[in-house]
Amino acid sequence: MAAPASSAAVKPVAKAATAVAAGGGDGKVWVNTKSKVYHCEGTKSYGTTKVGEYMTEADAKAKGNHGIQGKSCAK
Image 1 (cartoon, rainbow, N blue to C red):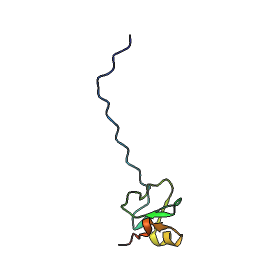
Image 2 (cartoon, rainbow, N blue to C red):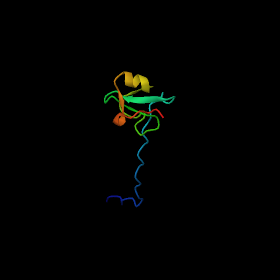
Image 3 (cartoon, one colour):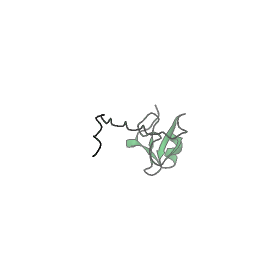
């Protein structure tokens, strides 16, 4: 005979937080090297895209990258 099913409720597992690549901050942007779009510090995609690297905003622009919708991070 089969064992009775457990009556314990199954709780959903929380989605793991996306890891942020080390080396950011200090005014650097995160450049998605595939899309050539850079993300400003404090934004959702900062340091989290599959491919990318940190650099200054000036370096990012000099290498042909652009901010989301053409916007700059400068305050």
